Length: 179
Image (cartoon, rainbow, N blue to C red; front, top):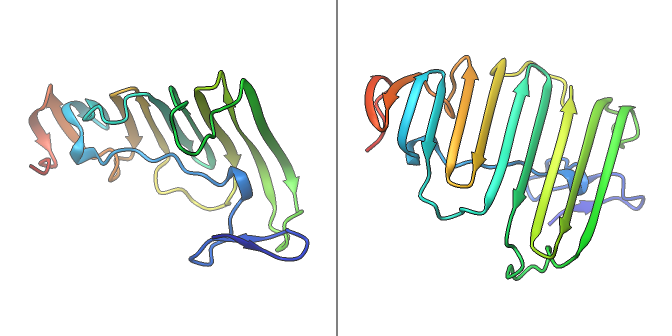
């Protein structure tokens, strides 16, 4: 449960971390060890998941201090939350060189949006530059899920994209996948 002050300037999650409001979301991907039929060439992986969440298209890209995430889920009309029940509804926010938050932290760039459409689609998207301003663990990273297919690359390799050489699930080199 989030809380805020009387002006609604600052919201915190249950762990006391500052939230970014309605655009505070993070796209989550299946763990690399759960993906099947992996084909990998060093720092790039293509694989399939278990097809449990087949109506999802999502992506995450990081290039130094620029981060971008997006997600779209199809056929959400039967979801109990009722979030998708609109022909067209959405909201967006844009901040550029903004010092408007309660702690006067500078947001270089943040563009976020979320919405629903056609009574069955829900989507979110965010692009940030230097928000937060720190040194990234991975210089370049891209992860995408298109229905049951996953495509990932990272330079240098990390936990989401480990160094591996494989062909259609046959492991040839690199970290041995968990069985």
